[in-house]
Image (cartoon, rainbow, N blue to C red; front, side, top):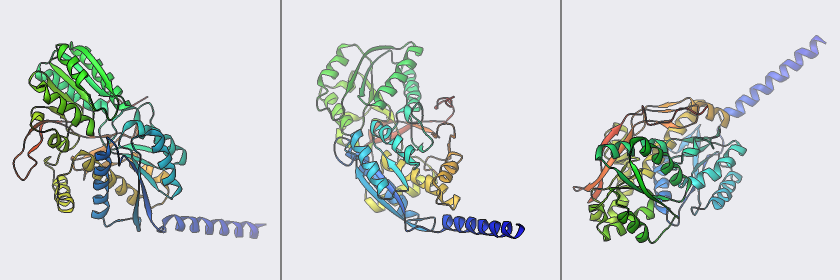
Length: 393
Protein backbone atom coordinates (compact mmCIF):
# COMPACT_ATOMS: atom_id res chain seq x y z
CA UNK A 1 0.00 0.00 0.00
CA UNK A 2 2.79 2.35 1.00
CA UNK A 3 4.69 1.50 -2.19
CA UNK A 4 1.62 2.25 -4.35
CA UNK A 5 1.15 5.62 -2.62
CA UNK A 6 4.79 6.51 -3.22
CA UNK A 7 4.49 5.59 -6.90
CA UNK A 8 1.26 7.58 -7.25
CA UNK A 9 2.86 10.59 -5.58
CA UNK A 10 5.85 10.39 -7.91
CA UNK A 11 3.58 10.20 -10.96
CA UNK A 12 1.53 13.20 -9.83
CA UNK A 13 4.71 15.19 -9.18
CA UNK A 14 6.00 14.34 -12.62
CA UNK A 15 2.71 15.39 -14.24
CA UNK A 16 2.81 18.71 -12.37
CA UNK A 17 6.36 19.33 -13.57
CA UNK A 18 5.38 18.47 -17.14
CA UNK A 19 2.36 20.81 -16.92
CA UNK A 20 4.44 23.63 -15.47
CA UNK A 21 7.09 23.09 -18.10
CA UNK A 22 4.52 23.17 -20.87
CA UNK A 23 3.08 26.40 -19.46
CA UNK A 24 6.48 28.04 -19.52
CA UNK A 25 7.52 26.75 -22.96
CA UNK A 26 7.37 29.27 -25.83
CA UNK A 27 4.47 28.72 -28.21
CA UNK A 28 4.70 29.05 -31.97
CA UNK A 29 3.53 32.66 -31.67
CA UNK A 30 1.68 35.12 -29.46
CA UNK A 31 -1.27 36.22 -31.59
CA UNK A 32 -3.05 39.55 -31.24
CA UNK A 33 -6.48 39.75 -32.89
CA UNK A 34 -7.27 43.31 -33.92
CA UNK A 35 -10.92 44.22 -34.58
CA UNK A 36 -10.96 47.84 -35.77
CA UNK A 37 -12.83 49.98 -38.32
CA UNK A 38 -10.77 50.04 -41.51
CA UNK A 39 -13.54 51.36 -43.75
CA UNK A 40 -16.37 53.86 -43.39
CA UNK A 41 -16.64 56.99 -41.26
CA UNK A 42 -14.30 55.70 -38.54
CA UNK A 43 -11.59 54.30 -40.83
CA UNK A 44 -9.08 56.88 -39.58
CA UNK A 45 -9.43 55.47 -36.07
CA UNK A 46 -8.70 51.93 -37.15
CA UNK A 47 -5.74 52.69 -39.41
CA UNK A 48 -4.18 54.88 -36.71
CA UNK A 49 -4.69 52.19 -34.08
CA UNK A 50 -2.93 49.76 -36.41
CA UNK A 51 0.05 52.08 -36.78
CA UNK A 52 0.43 52.62 -33.04
CA UNK A 53 0.20 48.93 -32.23
CA UNK A 54 2.50 47.85 -35.06
CA UNK A 55 5.17 50.33 -33.95
CA UNK A 56 4.93 49.13 -30.35
CA UNK A 57 5.43 45.52 -31.48
CA UNK A 58 8.40 46.50 -33.62
CA UNK A 59 10.08 48.55 -30.86
CA UNK A 60 9.91 45.64 -28.39
CA UNK A 61 11.56 43.26 -30.84
CA UNK A 62 8.27 41.62 -31.90
CA UNK A 63 8.52 38.98 -29.17
CA UNK A 64 6.88 38.19 -25.84
CA UNK A 65 7.22 35.11 -23.61
CA UNK A 66 10.02 33.97 -25.87
CA UNK A 67 7.71 33.74 -28.91
CA UNK A 68 7.27 35.96 -31.98
CA UNK A 69 4.25 38.27 -31.95
CA UNK A 70 1.76 37.83 -34.78
CA UNK A 71 -1.01 40.38 -35.43
CA UNK A 72 -4.17 39.51 -37.37
CA UNK A 73 -6.42 42.40 -38.43
CA UNK A 74 -10.13 42.41 -39.26
CA UNK A 75 -12.34 45.30 -40.40
CA UNK A 76 -15.33 45.79 -38.08
CA UNK A 77 -16.88 48.27 -40.56
CA UNK A 78 -18.22 50.13 -37.47
CA UNK A 79 -21.04 47.56 -37.24
CA UNK A 80 -21.66 45.65 -33.97
CA UNK A 81 -22.72 42.41 -35.68
CA UNK A 82 -19.67 42.50 -37.93
CA UNK A 83 -17.42 43.15 -34.93
CA UNK A 84 -18.74 40.02 -33.22
CA UNK A 85 -18.29 37.92 -36.35
CA UNK A 86 -14.73 39.16 -36.84
CA UNK A 87 -13.84 38.66 -33.16
CA UNK A 88 -15.00 35.06 -33.30
CA UNK A 89 -13.05 34.55 -36.52
CA UNK A 90 -9.87 35.84 -34.87
CA UNK A 91 -10.34 33.65 -31.82
CA UNK A 92 -10.88 30.64 -34.06
CA UNK A 93 -7.58 31.55 -35.74
CA UNK A 94 -5.78 31.24 -32.41
CA UNK A 95 -5.76 34.81 -31.08
CA UNK A 96 -4.38 34.99 -27.52
CA UNK A 97 -6.00 38.38 -26.97
CA UNK A 98 -8.34 40.83 -28.70
CA UNK A 99 -7.57 44.48 -29.43
CA UNK A 100 -10.28 47.02 -30.32
CA UNK A 101 -12.81 48.19 -31.29
CA UNK A 102 -12.81 51.81 -32.48
CA UNK A 103 -16.42 52.70 -31.61
CA UNK A 104 -18.03 52.02 -28.24
CA UNK A 105 -21.07 50.20 -29.63
CA UNK A 106 -18.82 47.71 -31.37
CA UNK A 107 -16.54 47.34 -28.37
CA UNK A 108 -19.47 46.55 -26.11
CA UNK A 109 -20.66 43.97 -28.64
CA UNK A 110 -17.39 42.00 -28.51
CA UNK A 111 -16.89 42.26 -24.74
CA UNK A 112 -19.16 39.22 -24.02
CA UNK A 113 -17.24 37.26 -26.68
CA UNK A 114 -13.96 37.88 -24.85
CA UNK A 115 -15.52 37.01 -21.50
CA UNK A 116 -17.12 33.81 -22.76
CA UNK A 117 -13.88 32.62 -24.35
CA UNK A 118 -11.82 33.89 -21.38
CA UNK A 119 -9.53 35.90 -23.63
CA UNK A 120 -8.34 39.42 -22.67
CA UNK A 121 -9.77 42.35 -24.62
CA UNK A 122 -7.68 45.55 -24.66
CA UNK A 123 -9.60 48.79 -25.30
CA UNK A 124 -7.56 51.87 -26.24
CA UNK A 125 -10.09 54.13 -28.00
CA UNK A 126 -13.77 53.53 -27.07
CA UNK A 127 -14.92 55.86 -24.29
CA UNK A 128 -18.46 54.79 -23.26
CA UNK A 129 -18.71 54.59 -19.47
CA UNK A 130 -20.44 51.20 -19.66
CA UNK A 131 -17.26 49.49 -20.87
CA UNK A 132 -15.75 49.71 -17.41
CA UNK A 133 -19.10 50.41 -15.74
CA UNK A 134 -22.37 48.50 -15.99
CA UNK A 135 -21.15 46.20 -18.79
CA UNK A 136 -17.69 45.52 -17.37
CA UNK A 137 -16.28 42.00 -17.16
CA UNK A 138 -13.15 40.29 -15.89
CA UNK A 139 -11.46 40.07 -19.29
CA UNK A 140 -11.96 43.63 -20.59
CA UNK A 141 -9.45 46.39 -19.84
CA UNK A 142 -9.40 50.03 -20.93
CA UNK A 143 -6.15 52.01 -20.91
CA UNK A 144 -7.65 55.15 -22.50
CA UNK A 145 -10.21 57.78 -21.48
CA UNK A 146 -13.78 57.16 -20.41
CA UNK A 147 -16.66 59.56 -21.00
CA UNK A 148 -17.06 60.55 -17.34
CA UNK A 149 -13.44 61.67 -17.17
CA UNK A 150 -13.84 63.83 -20.24
CA UNK A 151 -17.03 65.50 -19.04
CA UNK A 152 -15.22 66.63 -15.89
CA UNK A 153 -12.72 68.52 -18.03
CA UNK A 154 -15.45 69.87 -20.31
CA UNK A 155 -17.38 71.12 -17.27
CA UNK A 156 -14.25 72.93 -16.06
CA UNK A 157 -14.07 74.63 -19.47
CA UNK A 158 -17.72 75.73 -19.27
CA UNK A 159 -17.03 77.33 -15.91
CA UNK A 160 -13.79 78.95 -17.05
CA UNK A 161 -15.39 80.33 -20.23
CA UNK A 162 -18.47 81.58 -18.37
CA UNK A 163 -20.92 79.79 -20.65
CA UNK A 164 -24.60 79.88 -19.65
CA UNK A 165 -26.56 78.18 -22.45
CA UNK A 166 -25.46 74.92 -24.07
CA UNK A 167 -26.66 73.14 -27.20
CA UNK A 168 -25.49 69.51 -27.53
CA UNK A 169 -24.69 67.47 -30.64
CA UNK A 170 -23.73 63.84 -30.04
CA UNK A 171 -23.23 60.75 -32.16
CA UNK A 172 -26.09 58.28 -31.76
CA UNK A 173 -23.88 55.65 -30.13
CA UNK A 174 -23.43 54.55 -26.50
CA UNK A 175 -20.50 56.92 -26.05
CA UNK A 176 -22.53 59.86 -27.36
CA UNK A 177 -25.54 59.21 -25.16
CA UNK A 178 -23.44 58.26 -22.10
CA UNK A 179 -21.27 61.35 -22.40
CA UNK A 180 -24.13 63.76 -22.90
CA UNK A 181 -26.17 62.26 -20.06
CA UNK A 182 -23.26 62.76 -17.65
CA UNK A 183 -22.48 66.22 -18.98
CA UNK A 184 -26.12 67.28 -18.81
CA UNK A 185 -26.32 66.32 -15.15
CA UNK A 186 -23.15 68.26 -14.44
CA UNK A 187 -24.44 71.35 -16.22
CA UNK A 188 -27.64 71.29 -14.19
CA UNK A 189 -25.58 71.25 -11.02
CA UNK A 190 -23.66 74.29 -12.27
CA UNK A 191 -26.82 76.22 -13.08
CA UNK A 192 -26.10 76.14 -16.83
CA UNK A 193 -29.14 75.85 -19.12
CA UNK A 194 -29.49 73.21 -21.82
CA UNK A 195 -31.27 74.84 -24.75
CA UNK A 196 -31.27 71.89 -27.15
CA UNK A 197 -29.83 68.49 -28.03
CA UNK A 198 -29.50 66.32 -31.13
CA UNK A 199 -28.19 62.79 -31.74
CA UNK A 200 -26.79 62.17 -35.22
CA UNK A 201 -26.09 58.75 -36.78
CA UNK A 202 -22.53 57.75 -37.67
CA UNK A 203 -21.61 59.02 -41.12
CA UNK A 204 -24.03 61.96 -41.17
CA UNK A 205 -23.47 64.16 -44.22
CA UNK A 206 -25.70 67.12 -43.39
CA UNK A 207 -25.59 69.01 -40.08
CA UNK A 208 -27.17 72.20 -41.47
CA UNK A 209 -30.51 71.73 -39.69
CA UNK A 210 -28.78 71.02 -36.37
CA UNK A 211 -26.49 74.04 -36.79
CA UNK A 212 -29.45 76.29 -37.59
CA UNK A 213 -31.30 75.03 -34.50
CA UNK A 214 -28.25 75.75 -32.36
CA UNK A 215 -28.02 79.32 -33.65
CA UNK A 216 -31.74 79.94 -33.12
CA UNK A 217 -31.60 78.50 -29.60
CA UNK A 218 -29.51 81.40 -28.34
CA UNK A 219 -26.78 79.05 -27.10
CA UNK A 220 -23.41 80.55 -26.26
CA UNK A 221 -21.76 77.11 -26.31
CA UNK A 222 -22.07 73.97 -28.45
CA UNK A 223 -21.02 70.74 -26.75
CA UNK A 224 -19.97 68.09 -29.29
CA UNK A 225 -19.49 64.31 -29.00
CA UNK A 226 -18.44 63.07 -32.44
CA UNK A 227 -15.23 61.73 -33.96
CA UNK A 228 -13.49 61.01 -37.25
CA UNK A 229 -15.30 62.02 -40.45
CA UNK A 230 -18.36 63.15 -38.45
CA UNK A 231 -16.31 65.80 -36.64
CA UNK A 232 -14.84 67.06 -39.91
CA UNK A 233 -18.25 67.30 -41.59
CA UNK A 234 -19.83 69.09 -38.64
CA UNK A 235 -17.04 71.65 -38.20
CA UNK A 236 -16.75 72.36 -41.93
CA UNK A 237 -20.47 73.10 -42.15
CA UNK A 238 -20.32 75.15 -38.96
CA UNK A 239 -17.53 77.23 -40.51
CA UNK A 240 -19.59 77.88 -43.63
CA UNK A 241 -22.09 79.86 -41.54
CA UNK A 242 -19.41 81.40 -39.31
CA UNK A 243 -20.74 79.52 -36.27
CA UNK A 244 -17.42 79.61 -34.33
CA UNK A 245 -17.70 83.41 -34.20
CA UNK A 246 -21.15 83.17 -32.59
CA UNK A 247 -20.90 80.08 -30.37
CA UNK A 248 -18.01 78.52 -28.42
CA UNK A 249 -17.60 75.02 -29.84
CA UNK A 250 -16.09 72.44 -27.47
CA UNK A 251 -16.30 68.74 -26.79
CA UNK A 252 -14.91 65.55 -25.36
CA UNK A 253 -12.11 64.16 -27.49
CA UNK A 254 -13.96 64.93 -30.69
CA UNK A 255 -11.09 66.76 -32.40
CA UNK A 256 -7.43 65.98 -33.14
CA UNK A 257 -4.68 67.34 -35.40
CA UNK A 258 -5.78 65.26 -38.41
CA UNK A 259 -9.34 66.54 -38.17
CA UNK A 260 -8.13 70.12 -37.61
CA UNK A 261 -6.14 69.99 -40.86
CA UNK A 262 -9.12 68.55 -42.71
CA UNK A 263 -11.49 71.24 -41.41
CA UNK A 264 -9.25 74.18 -42.26
CA UNK A 265 -8.83 77.67 -40.70
CA UNK A 266 -12.35 77.73 -39.24
CA UNK A 267 -11.20 75.19 -36.64
CA UNK A 268 -9.04 77.75 -34.81
CA UNK A 269 -10.49 78.47 -31.37
CA UNK A 270 -12.40 75.18 -31.04
CA UNK A 271 -11.71 73.49 -27.68
CA UNK A 272 -11.60 69.78 -26.88
CA UNK A 273 -10.33 67.06 -24.63
CA UNK A 274 -7.00 65.95 -26.07
CA UNK A 275 -6.98 62.20 -25.57
CA UNK A 276 -3.30 62.34 -26.43
CA UNK A 277 -0.95 64.86 -28.00
CA UNK A 278 2.48 64.54 -29.56
CA UNK A 279 3.65 67.69 -27.74
CA UNK A 280 3.00 66.31 -24.25
CA UNK A 281 6.31 66.56 -22.44
CA UNK A 282 7.43 63.19 -21.08
CA UNK A 283 10.60 61.26 -22.01
CA UNK A 284 8.52 58.27 -23.10
CA UNK A 285 6.33 60.39 -25.38
CA UNK A 286 9.34 62.05 -27.00
CA UNK A 287 10.79 58.61 -27.74
CA UNK A 288 7.48 57.41 -29.19
CA UNK A 289 6.99 60.52 -31.36
CA UNK A 290 10.52 60.30 -32.73
CA UNK A 291 10.05 56.63 -33.66
CA UNK A 292 6.59 57.23 -35.11
CA UNK A 293 7.78 60.13 -37.27
CA UNK A 294 10.71 58.07 -38.50
CA UNK A 295 8.50 55.11 -39.44
CA UNK A 296 5.41 56.89 -40.85
CA UNK A 297 6.63 60.43 -41.64
CA UNK A 298 3.68 61.97 -39.82
CA UNK A 299 2.70 63.13 -36.34
CA UNK A 300 0.92 60.52 -34.18
CA UNK A 301 -2.71 61.16 -33.28
CA UNK A 302 -4.66 60.06 -30.21
CA UNK A 303 -5.69 56.69 -31.63
CA UNK A 304 -2.09 55.78 -32.45
CA UNK A 305 -0.77 57.14 -29.16
CA UNK A 306 -3.19 55.19 -27.00
CA UNK A 307 -2.77 52.00 -29.04
CA UNK A 308 1.02 52.20 -28.63
CA UNK A 309 0.71 52.91 -24.92
CA UNK A 310 -1.92 50.29 -24.11
CA UNK A 311 -0.39 47.34 -25.93
CA UNK A 312 3.04 48.02 -24.45
CA UNK A 313 1.57 48.09 -20.95
CA UNK A 314 -0.35 44.86 -21.45
CA UNK A 315 2.54 42.97 -23.01
CA UNK A 316 4.88 44.13 -20.25
CA UNK A 317 2.55 42.50 -17.72
CA UNK A 318 2.23 39.34 -19.83
CA UNK A 319 6.01 39.08 -19.93
CA UNK A 320 6.27 39.42 -16.16
CA UNK A 321 4.01 36.41 -15.60
CA UNK A 322 6.28 34.08 -17.58
CA UNK A 323 3.13 32.11 -18.31
CA UNK A 324 0.77 31.34 -21.21
CA UNK A 325 -2.20 31.25 -18.83
CA UNK A 326 -4.60 34.09 -19.74
CA UNK A 327 -6.02 34.08 -16.21
CA UNK A 328 -2.57 34.99 -14.89
CA UNK A 329 -2.31 37.81 -17.42
CA UNK A 330 -5.62 39.21 -16.18
CA UNK A 331 -4.53 38.95 -12.54
CA UNK A 332 -1.26 40.72 -13.29
CA UNK A 333 -2.76 43.50 -15.43
CA UNK A 334 -5.53 44.42 -13.02
CA UNK A 335 -3.00 44.93 -10.22
CA UNK A 336 -0.48 46.86 -12.31
CA UNK A 337 0.99 50.33 -12.55
CA UNK A 338 2.74 51.61 -15.65
CA UNK A 339 5.64 54.02 -15.07
CA UNK A 340 6.61 54.03 -18.76
CA UNK A 341 3.37 55.48 -20.17
CA UNK A 342 3.65 58.33 -22.67
CA UNK A 343 1.36 60.22 -20.26
CA UNK A 344 3.51 59.69 -17.18
CA UNK A 345 2.66 57.09 -14.50
CA UNK A 346 -0.70 55.30 -14.91
CA UNK A 347 -2.50 52.79 -12.73
CA UNK A 348 -5.04 50.07 -13.54
CA UNK A 349 -8.01 49.89 -11.16
CA UNK A 350 -8.77 46.31 -10.16
CA UNK A 351 -12.38 47.26 -9.38
CA UNK A 352 -13.36 48.05 -12.97
CA UNK A 353 -10.26 47.60 -15.15
CA UNK A 354 -10.14 51.33 -15.97
CA UNK A 355 -6.72 52.95 -16.20
CA UNK A 356 -6.32 56.24 -14.38
CA UNK A 357 -3.93 59.04 -15.26
CA UNK A 358 -3.76 62.69 -16.25
CA UNK A 359 -6.31 64.42 -18.49
CA UNK A 360 -5.46 66.91 -21.23
CA UNK A 361 -7.50 69.86 -22.54
CA UNK A 362 -6.58 71.67 -25.75
CA UNK A 363 -7.47 74.42 -28.20
CA UNK A 364 -7.12 74.34 -31.98
CA UNK A 365 -4.42 76.80 -33.10
CA UNK A 366 -2.17 77.59 -36.06
CA UNK A 367 0.96 75.46 -35.91
CA UNK A 368 4.55 76.40 -36.67
CA UNK A 369 6.66 74.23 -39.01
CA UNK A 370 7.59 71.40 -38.81
CA UNK A 371 4.37 70.94 -36.80
CA UNK A 372 1.05 70.73 -38.65
CA UNK A 373 -0.25 74.05 -39.99
CA UNK A 374 -3.37 73.55 -37.85
CA UNK A 375 -3.14 71.54 -34.64
CA UNK A 376 -4.16 71.21 -31.02
CA UNK A 377 -2.29 73.02 -28.28
CA UNK A 378 -2.58 71.59 -24.77
CA UNK A 379 -3.79 74.39 -22.51
CA UNK A 380 -4.65 72.53 -19.31
CA UNK A 381 -3.45 69.34 -17.61
CA UNK A 382 -5.75 67.75 -15.03
CA UNK A 383 -4.48 65.42 -12.29
CA UNK A 384 -6.29 62.07 -11.95
CA UNK A 385 -7.95 63.08 -8.67
CA UNK A 386 -11.55 64.04 -9.38
CA UNK A 387 -11.57 62.88 -13.00
CA UNK A 388 -12.78 59.32 -12.43
CA UNK A 389 -16.00 57.94 -10.95
CA UNK A 390 -15.92 55.99 -7.71
CA UNK A 391 -15.33 52.27 -8.07
CA UNK A 392 -18.55 50.34 -8.79
CA UNK A 393 -20.01 48.55 -5.78
